[in-house]
Length: 189
Image (cartoon, rainbow, N blue to C red; front, top):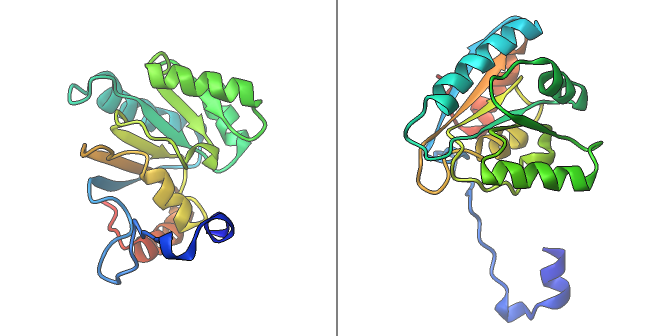
């Protein structure tokens, strides 16, 4: 917005709202199914659920030519735990703010080629990733901000394909899910 004001002729500017703010419309893609899975806070519980989702939607999914998975975490520590400690059953890479740019680019390239089947990331990867072959996005826990949920879930269901956003949550995180449902105008299944 600031750049257009500085460099562009006022008569040539156009603003396009890709989401809209109509009260009836939900704020996420119509091709994305929103699911929630309650679990306890243990890594072993989350690892088991994630492994099952990967087997179903990445390893055994025949609807996609080269299916890949994104796992979003709230913190760098969680990314490191999932990326290093979890046995995901597929080749994965990690992305967060402490990972050098050169390494990030290497991870993006390998993911794009399909050499890596999974990226475990903080919100650093939520915006701008545009890969059509992502059948499912997994969120290790509900994000604090609805906008983060919208951007993360928007990494699936691209290019006319259907996708699924799965959010893991504990009993104590139910209110955060309700807030996301209300603000994003979605219904978790």
